[in-house]
Length: 200
Image 1 (cartoon, rainbow, N blue to C red):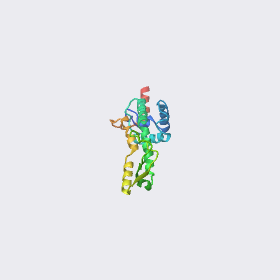
Image 2 (image 1 turned 60 degrees about the horizontal axis):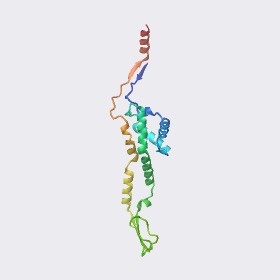
Image 3 (image 1 turned 90 degrees about the vertical axis):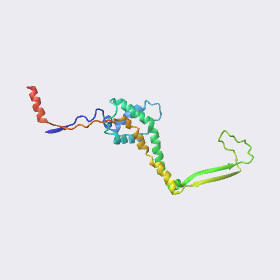
């Protein structure tokens, strides 16, 4: 019976060979983060899971740049430590912005101008502290048009925080990938006959 046999595709392991499952990734992550002098950890638990599947989807079959697997892992943790909290916060902000009702989008900035006649306290020119009382107040409030409001919303949502974060991992993977190997088909009977000849 003919059976296909494949030679290794690349000289280095791929991402999915380094971590075959989320449980393996999470165990290594927890162990590595314990050495960082930051409390709490850079990412929340649900963000760690999300990141693993995002990395698997984007780089799963990509060979890593390092022949030393441990060094590759350390680079992954360092990248998460440096850029992870910012990514998590940006995603949180984008979620909040997406959920804003139209009424909130139309609200513009508001300026308040207070004036005090003969205040008993001398105003300071070095701080932003306000006087303890006022005699009159003027306000100015800006209301956005729908076009202006949605244009601002479009600009805020146009940036892809997740894609920007995932690009930080690109340098951890090999950019020069060799040709894939062609499968060889081996007959079990031929192997058995060859072994018998060697025994004789």
